[in-house]
Picture 1: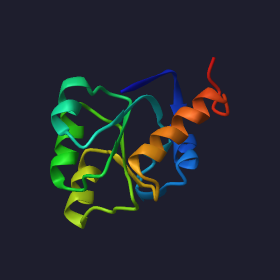
Picture 2: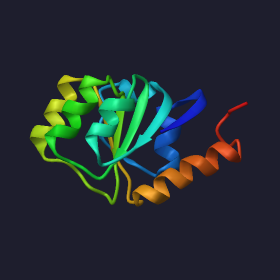
Picture 3: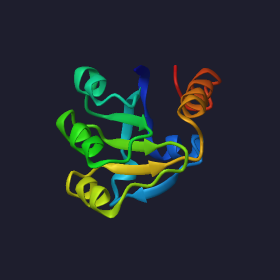
Picture 4: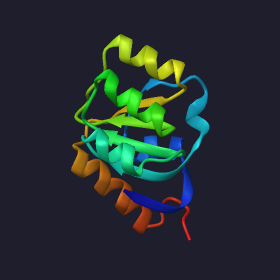
Length: 124
């Protein structure tokens, strides 16, 4: 988990990760306060909270169910993975933005960290 000290527009995170938008019904204009990176949904259940981004390699419906339980705003799938349509529909019902980045989990997190440290995203 990484707290961002100040929220970041989800649109800016999309640019930093060069992410493709899988699902956005106007929610991409939201703000992200915390980023979680995990393939263990039990960790997300323990530490997750609203206004968060989940970075994961899991594209199954359980990922959406977990995000729904802790009110996660967006999920970014790594390695260019795209979930099946039923998983996308589940995310749509729960108003969860879905992104996909070609980067690995490690590189996606590193890019967000470097952007934060270089203050290319407007942080104090």
